[in-house]
Image (cartoon, rainbow, N blue to C red):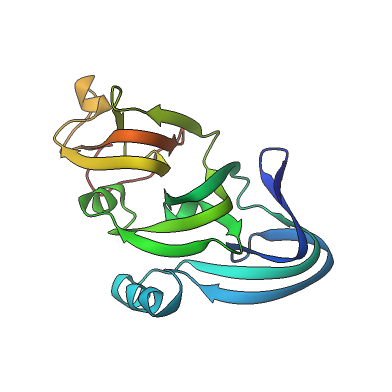
Length: 210
């Protein structure tokens, strides 16, 4: 069971089951625990091939046992995400932990990933259970509906879930509209039905002043 201790520490209660978490993110635990290092990029042969193609350096660990583990990373804010036989798409640097039964993998992002500076692949979390994602500052969860699509700065994007299609747009962003930008800029447009998680801080991007 995932629960928050404040807004920057994740507590996970284990009763013989397992949790997968970002390597090095555990700050404390009580009880009896066993630890195993895992590679990022997904599980099985497909994950191995993807890691070889992308050079992804994400490393996770599996913790299994009886007791409570506490996780945190660079005092980042943490949000809990519930999955019900669906998929969470999340930037690898923003994924803190998942239930042990959830499947992790990678998905091709195309130009969006290149513009946001996170590479051409993003991490997927599939199944039923809980995941914990991180943000620089308190994340905002925005609803997308067929009537109300959403435009997002790629530097502020964290994750999304639901039946969403994303389109990459170049040549304009929020700052260029206000006359404050320079060079080529980018946006991600989400359409459909789902949730998008954004942070109030922007990563440096490849595409210019976004």
